[in-house]
Length: 234
Image 1 (cartoon, rainbow, N blue to C red):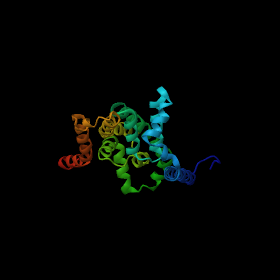
Image 2 (cartoon, helix red, strand yellow):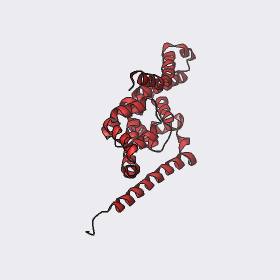
Image 3 (cartoon, rainbow, N blue to C red):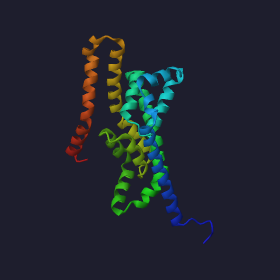
Image 4 (tube, rainbow, N blue to C red):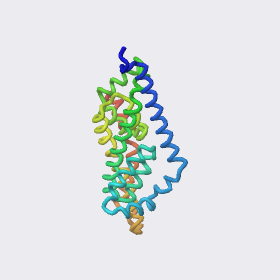
């Protein structure tokens, strides 16, 4: 055997080391969020003041912060709410969606690079068929899980551990979060507009009632999807 030949044992050790690094990254992210002052700066006032100093770069910086927050396991509702509160319903939606897509892509590649080899070594015959099914039906699987509001960040990392193709994951995520993101940013942005205007009479406007209706509807989406799935036996 040549001295440079890589043995299965070497591959196994390499996979374990990568998995340990992934676990350490996740633990560090949780510690940063829970035990450091970072969340104190994640308020509409504090982040808004910071972004005001960035001028034209503010949207890009916000999207970078959103992407980093996704990888650090910050709640997506917090980040999305900040985007809507700072930029309004419509621009907030655009910036949040792009930030979420960048963060989801980075988290996926972290999971794929550091965890896929180890996860693959643990998959037995029973789990392999599910892994193969995800590879074949990646777009539909990701789209469905996004529509039923499967936890965003864990899914980003978790999908990286599967055989799903990146572009299936990317397109399924992009389409799957579209409706929920718009509904939430529209709701928060509308309330923010009423708050800043000081015209409380607008609370009974069509736009406010429409945003509330959309917000309530968003909680029914998972049930609707599951009902459709059961009806057509998808």
